[in-house]
Length: 253
Length: 122
Image 1 (tube, each protein chain N blue to C red):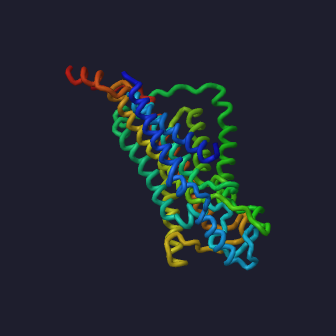
Image 2: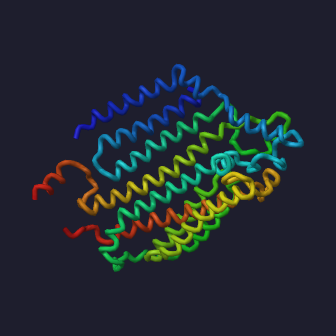
Image 3: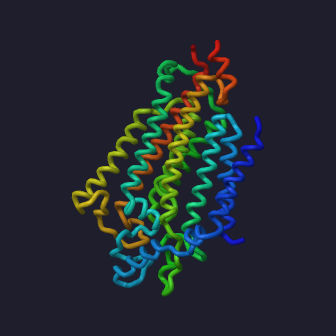
């Protein structure tokens, strides 16, 4: 196959984009060095604050998560995050649907490769480490970088490792239960906001002081729910993909 | 060269590598990897649009306790990229499932005219 043409065309497209972005008005607009939202955010919080300063220990803030990205993702744009989790669920469910007919035809008697001694001996310890670190990241999502998505991915990595070392399929029912309960809990927290504060996903509990571990409690709860959901989804996706691969790979005509 | 130029060029290079990968290969797995590279390029560029010179991470720490707090980068692009990464994981999962299906049906990950035509004629 001729590979010169694709190389030239992609180089051409990208250099056009580069000249557009790096010279002229686009650069002025995109990289003016202003952060309107960041300034508005801190100014409003500072004005509402009794001490007139924003920092660890500030109270009566609109959202007291020290990590501003978290307060955007789970408070100002919380409904969007619910949609995002739904898209993730739909993708994993779609993957299961595409591969489901195949799995049922082959039956559950697919031979599995025995795992090596090193994998068997090491994986419980690595799982323990990943599990604890993952939950620490999930529970500190409002204070430090991280949160439900990366922490959930870490927990899922531990579960996948355990799955690989045990050489059998994990309990699908338990994973589905965690998935469903976490999705339900997200909506339930949103409805609690409607009942107590009049709008969906409103922060209905006391905000606490910025920088404390228990500041912005609803945000912590939401990230815990997201972490559980993401870990269940990712484990489910990997087990769906893995257990189709194991059945030999040849289809009867 | 300043930060904006360097990071924009690396984001565009990632995008170009992905574009070339999709265009020059017929392997389904390589397509998925190439789309992932393009996504990474776009995400890097999006994060860059929130950057400002000398700004800190958008996490309120002790730096804000002083009389003149340090400015922080715009957190909105970072929040959008968080969403983008998760959606990217979802699309990759779906694409991988389709690739498995394709491999099981055709016995190969190559997606091209030559093997399929012979199969249809038989």
